[in-house]
Amino acid sequence: MMYDVIIIGGGVTGCAILNELSKYQLKTLLLEKEEDVCSGTSKANSAIIHAGFDAKNGTLKAKLNVRGAELIKQLSEDLHFSYLNNGSMVLCFDEEQIDGLKELYERGVNNGVKDLEIIDGDRARELEPHLSKDVVAALYAPTAAIVCPFDMTIAFAENAILNGSEIKLNTEVKTIERVDDYYLINNEYQSKCIVNAAGLYGDKIHNLLFNDDLKLTPRKGDYCLFDKEIGNLVSHTLFQLPTALGKGVLVTPTVHGNLLVGPSATDIEDKEFTATTKEDLNMIIQKGKLSVDNIPMNKVITSFSGLRSRPQNKDFIIRSLDNNYYEAIGIESPGLSSAPAIAEMISEMIVNDLKPSRNDNYANKREDFKRLADMDINERAKLIRENPLYGNIICRCEEISEGEIVDVINRPLRATSLDAIKRRVRAGMGRCQGGFCMPKVMEILARELNVDILEINKNNSKSKLLERRLYEKV
Image 1 (cartoon, rainbow, N blue to C red):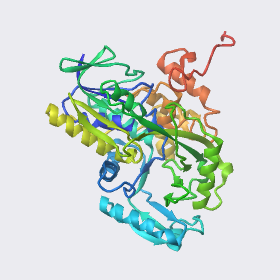
Image 2: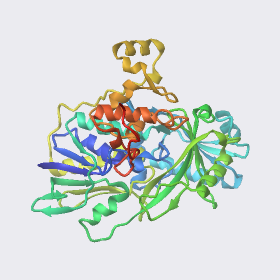
Image 3: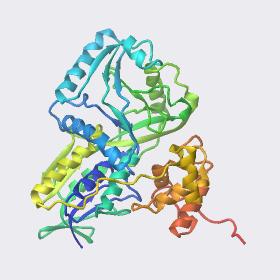
Image 4: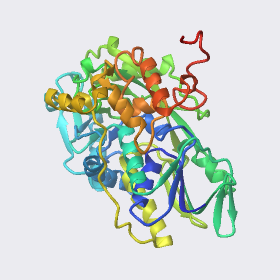
């Protein structure tokens, strides 16, 4: 089958591009090597929508961060993903380094960031009562926000499917050939255009077609996630002014009510190494305590790490090359913030080349998941009367019902693994980290997918959970 466009990579960048292209009469397919979208860099990051003062003037990062942040609020309302405009502060701990705040301020103004302000330590502590007494000044950016990166990526993907686009999971791109006037991928998929949005593996995809030996370096960041019990310790995202000792770490609330501290920043070679290390976790804990007094470390419920791709030129690589080949790779921070603007940029290139008609039937609204935890008692009662499965609580920590789990298994982009369920409805995200609900979720998955429970994985096919039965039910 011939496609107009094939996108390689199902992270937030690839899914945003897929959704943007679904506004046109194009036959578009996204290929993702994992069992779900949002399985790489997009699943493990700080979830920050940056205001846009950090990127150097004139870079793609600067241009696309500000534009992307402007788009995301409306997109969150249209596509129903979690978003909170909580603002951010960059903290300064030394009077002699306030010039560093002024430099960020000027950079932000030149980038087009609105309402930036340098405030003194007392004003900063009025906004954040638990802020360290050592903070002498801060750059305040009220336009900064936080999102759920899973929600955002899945919303783009589902909306694209509803508008006629296709997604093929568990499909790793191993070969690409140029045949006449089209591309042949894995000797199976044909397309007039290719968009390389393959994240950490963007260099591998590039090098299948070009001989310039492009390299993207994985940069690992470790995080600590805290229980919701202390999720209100801070309300803003708190950065630290970079010093000779390093860039520092952030302390931020999450849209779901937790507290997040991190990340570290370690360049590695292994693109699959996501284990946390004692050294990095100790480092982010100590640096986090510089910003906020008395962070209760006994409230950590999990730690995790994510990998982002570090390009050699330290800017996004977004371009059109020969024969309708396009790239959106090297998308490190502020990639999440920039995703809708990157999608606009790539889409404009493709539309200029292929000149498709608009999709007059494009729907920019997506129905949200039903979320029991967000409903009042009357709404819950009504929903349970309509479908009793919503009255059976499976995940106690996050108040997730069987009805919610069944819903996301049967939506246009099916959840087929434990992690896919977790990303959509948060079953297993709470204090016990799945200790109570995991067996129940596996049973529901097996039933709804009509497969043996031994086939249910944590995520991809390499993450088998059950080896064999000890006995059969009589």
